[in-house]
Length: 116
Length: 111
Image (cartoon, rainbow over the protein chains, first blue to last red):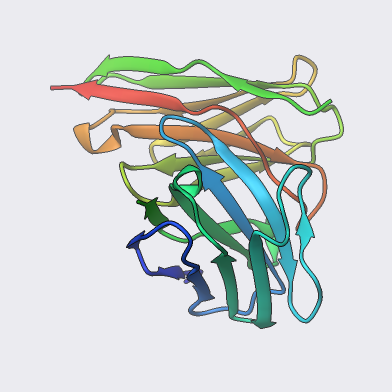
């Protein structure tokens, strides 16, 4: 149980285009989903917290107009990187809160974004 | 402030025990977690411990928590080559709240 999927797993795009990444909780309902960014050999940096049906809460320094987050249902959250630039190239990982003991977060497999 | 620190590398021989250490600064931490990340993959939850516990054991994994010293450790018994990965400790202060991650410890298991 507690499986989280992400799509696509890898995407290469041209500078200036927008890219949408989907995060789905497959076997549970997630009222809260989180989006992280990870640079090579570094830890995860929380970008935003997404609650179903409400606006996402962004961490300091993260541009909300650049990284659009939509949490339309209890099993789906999307991150759209708008007008992507090479510096946006990174590994993006989502997680979903399953509730219950410890209210642990379960992570998706990540999406590798490369902007040319 | 919030800070979680880990040593960056650990190398052990197959069959030995591995001990990965983590320190944190937030005394109001409620849950502490260990995650495993293999190359190019997301994070896999290994285990967690509530802050009022001292120890938790789950098969080959043993978590020790010293709340006074704000020190958390993960011991992997009979380490296998498949255990080679990056291990992150993380803490949170409230249920459903944001996780604060350490830098990750890269475990290398040599045959």
